[in-house]
Amino acid sequence: ADIDGDVRVAPLELTDLASVRAFVDAWDGPLDVLVNNAGVMAIQQLELTESGLEKQFATNHLGHFALAVGLHDALAAAEGEARIVSVSSRGHLFSPVLFEDINFERREYTPFGAYGQSKTANVLFAVGATDRWADDGIYANALMPGGIATNLQRHVGADYIAQRLEEFEKRGQRMTLKTPEQGAATSVLVAASPLLDGIGGRYFEDCNEAEVVEPGSAESAAAGVAAYALDRDNADRLWELSLDLIA
Image 1 (tube, rainbow, N blue to C red):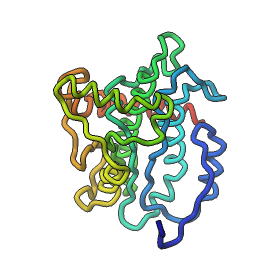
Image 2 (image 1 turned 60 degrees about the vertical axis):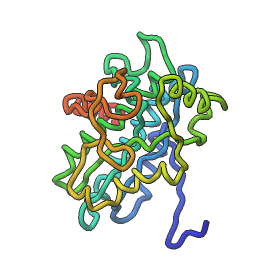
Image 3 (image 1 turned 90 degrees about the horizontal axis):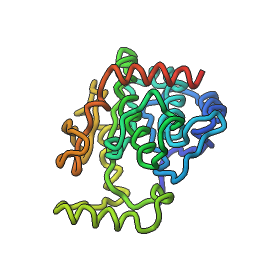
Image 4 (image 1 turned 135 degrees about the vertical axis):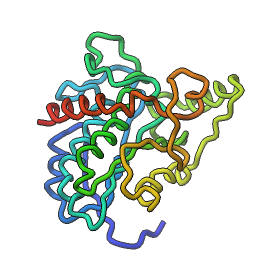
């Protein structure tokens, strides 16, 4: 597709904090919107980064955290308010952040347990960033884009989507896959809608704010956000841990 305007591309490896720092150092000028969209899902065996962090937590949360912290001043320099879009997932319902064992040293590694923890961290980041940065005109919200058949599923096999559709059907529920464009719609809403002026620390799906649900309930199988993902004490704890990890 033809893209109008000034489009620039730069390397950024989220598991490598030196790469994140280099990207931040090269950034020039104000920044209106930061969309933290990169991610990895359900790596089948436990993988650690060179710094010893579980790879999904390192990629999906910590790299984005370091990027946002590094770009804080650019966001604060935006005309009007700046927005951070934290792309989470309904997968956050698989697990809270288990602060006592982030890296699966004392519990069995499960691919979706690790994914769930990292996606909960994406929501808690939005809560923590808004609490700390709203006075600077920076608001962060999290979202679930929807089920989309993309390269994100590369670690779970070609039949993963078909299996998920079958599971929903057996429960008498309907899972509808979205196109990438439909999946981007909630991100665009969070990034650009005037309805969200001055609003942060929330979780959206299907272009609406989500209801709080109990993980494992019938309601949570279809939609919703866990209370633990919006908990300010959890957000504060994650923020301090993340600052230590990027120091």
